[in-house]
Image (cartoon, rainbow, N blue to C red; front, top):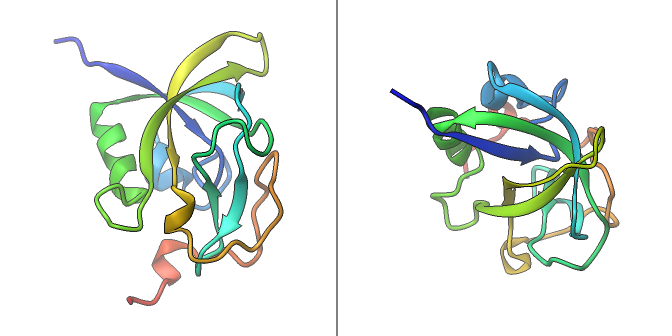
Length: 144
């Protein structure tokens, strides 16, 4: 049986060495550092100070992150982590990204939000997310 594989671009806490990497990317194939071909606003937002890519292509900066190859089960798990089923969760969209190492351009899934679903923004637009000391990991969040 052939399992479909998907390219995924991560720009925040799912990157290697970041708090949610093990939960979402454990065992997935790292393809390399990458950046978005289009500019997007990347900000620290919300009550948990999460990195958030706002879906406004052409606004902001090209965003640096990492590309991975994942199977269907891992992609479904990422959808849960990113709350795609929740009213204020992220949307999964395909965007063109470019490999930092060799310049190859390919489409990848990534997680974005509409600006209208962001209650508060705590940063300027970023080109790359570095762990914000204010970030609240999922296990430390109080239920609403």
